[in-house]
Length: 403
Ligand SMILES: *Cc1c(COP(=O)(O)O)cnc(C)c1O
Image (tube, rainbow, N blue to C red; front, side):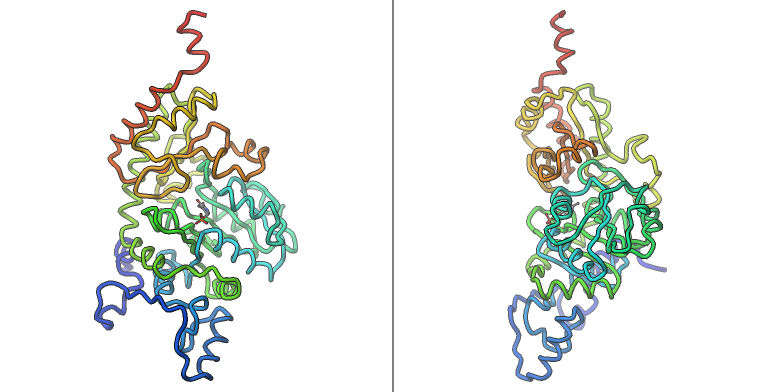
């Protein structure tokens, strides 16, 4: 029988340890490698610049690093992928995916909302790709003869909309589908099992999990990852071996962290949803917030990120609330040990077209919260005391004043 996820997460990329006589993976920081046999090194160079495995010497760190390779193999195993490529950030990974796709065409079909800078990269045409933004039900009609990629994010940042991966894959036909699965992690969702060609993570978030690594990783078939490694060898952006070590280490506790934070998020979402000081809560674990019934089918649970608005929609009320938090850290990013909160329209998604923001529910008062590993009741206490500092809705205040 196949081993469970937690077992594989602990042991992935470590099968040669007994042979090496070590208990933790060695870190190789070499920027270059001795090449006494020039012809052998030249053959290895040719292999690496094509995106293939080394043939002997690793030659140069931008082409290959064994510590990064270990993390890639481990992550690929957990995603059920043949291979993976790790980058210095999630955006570097996404850029390489787009550049690699250009050999097939220069058109991308994508679904909003997605991470603000990913939206910006596609909309700006910075990498020479033209984008058609559409909905998950209209992928088929957006595909053109030169469409090279369909890009989706589920759960979506920051509204937590869920996208039906299998449906998108069916509509995309022969066009590869990339799924940004950052919010789900392979603990809760493995997009390749639903037919996606590539899965991407901002490893800065849950995979790193401790707020101290910036990284990205993309996994898929040998052929697609080879094309991506070909781009990486030419453009740079390989993940640093110390970061790779931390990510590989972090995979061992990923399941524990994801499930603990998820349980906390479920509790906080319920409390917020029934609190009159809160205007709305977006969380796929709440009743009626998973209309396509994807939880249990595509995703094992709702994850640990939620978004909400205060009842008082005055921008100053939101600022007062964030300023009054004592335990929760007001900061961008997510998936850290500590709970983080930020308003996407003001920070992460300010690079997104304002009309598109409004259309996809990224209002000025929306707050995105990523539950950390603290005690849930301490987090609730912090939210509760900060909510108490916020004036109520304008209408409520009038009632109280007898107006
Ligand atoms: C943060 C994030 C990214 C970008 O990753 P970086 O590591 O910051 O470059 C991409 N997608 C999602 C969903 C994210 O949350």
